[in-house]
Every structure is written in C-alpha cells, then in structure tokens.
Length: 100
Image 1 (cartoon, one colour):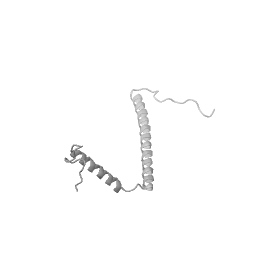
Image 2 (image 1 turned 90 degrees about the vertical axis):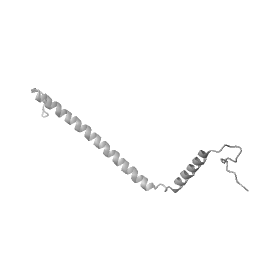
Image 3 (image 1 turned 45 degrees about the vertical axis):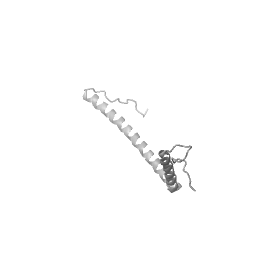
Image 4 (image 1 turned 180 degrees about the vertical axis):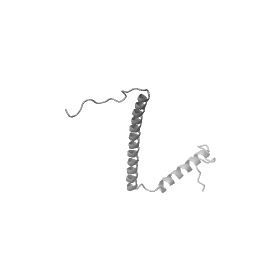
C-alpha cells in the first residue's frame, strides 16, 4: 500500500510544487519554536514594565532639564550681547518695593 503525498508528481489532481513543501516545513518549524518558547512570567513582565517607566521618567527629566538649560543659556547670551554692544539698560530693574 502506498500513500500519495498531495504534492508529489504522481498525484493527478495537483501539480508538484517544491515551494509548498518548504512552506509547510517552515510552518512546522514555527509551531515547534512557539511550543518551545517559555511561558511568560508575570513577575518578569511587571519588572520590565517598571524599568520601562523608570527609563521614560528619566528621559522626560533629561529633556526638561535640557530645555531649561537652553533657555537659561540663551538668556545669558542675549544679556552678554547687550552688554558687549555698550548698552546700559540691558537688565530690567524692578523699582517697586514689596514693603509698601
């Protein structure tokens, strides 16, 4: 008794395609890899999420500090430019006192 593979040249209904065998083999390999993959650990997921949030907070802090630093350096640069041009009214002076 012989068993005919549906993709063999002896099978009359379908033409033989080597690609079909390759695709079927890749699907079998993918299923085996999925089965061999360890189950996700909820504690490891929580730890990874905590570290991702910590990294995000750190990045936001760095961006805010960088933005504030750029603003301060820009203000100092404008003040220096004003002073170097010989002006005397570069910095506004508050003349109102808080003691009134």
